Image (cartoon, rainbow, N blue to C red; front, side):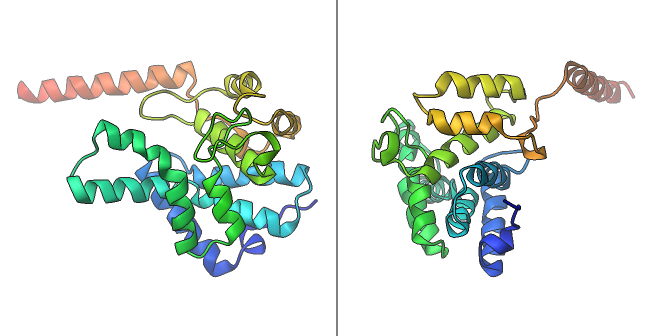
Length: 228
């Protein structure tokens, strides 16, 4: 099945709007690298392997671009109301897929995409949220999106942890197959030919040493300015 561009999957005007929202969300979520677009590409490759129909792939693509829109909307509303997030409000952010469903509707995503946004945190064993769906109760597109989102996040650096390598992330998927992820989706993903979006942003030992040297040199520059 040939790869289709974003504008072949969804309307060109919607594609531009969704891509802009994805970039805004990535910035809000503090991703140094494009996340939502990467999730969309990974999900698309898995969807092709499952031979999903074109309209289903379009809905999945839109959902991938918009999947964290609810988290942005919730935190924005909290901050506007209180100026900061309490611990209880941070826990309440688990409702973000429901808010995301609403926001996806508001920006014009189709109903299938809205539901994929709602269910992209459902787990294969029923321990996910917001509806505690399990196994095939979760639409295949949502199961694909769950894995694609997780893999993209695992292989990118977050404020609280470094990026995993490809090998580490693949091992994590295997360990969580049958718990968080549909084992069939994991199996298909692991069988795919690698593409650029599957690569990890993990830094090599040499890059980490180089960064430490640069930081150290900047520190010495700062102190040397006091002696002038």
